[in-house]
Image (cartoon, rainbow, N blue to C red; front, side, top):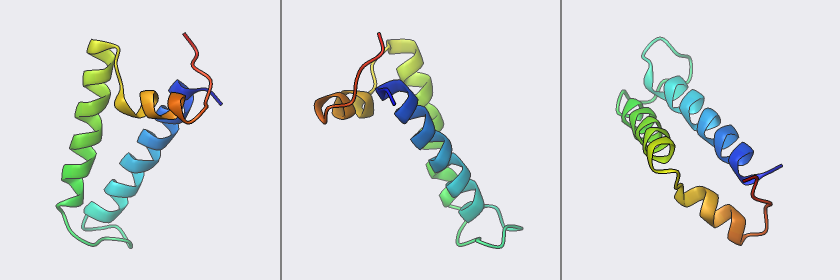
Length: 69
């Protein structure tokens, strides 16, 4: 798996998990503040799309995952 694929898989998992933990009707509900984490992930995805730079992708590349340019 390449760095950009890993970033998107992790971001998708974080969004789904934070929604499950933040929506009151969910059986996994903990607190509505988990929805702030959903917004944080969304803002980071937006920023990386506009600037073409993602910290997690840089870290994954340094850990040895292949970049797909």
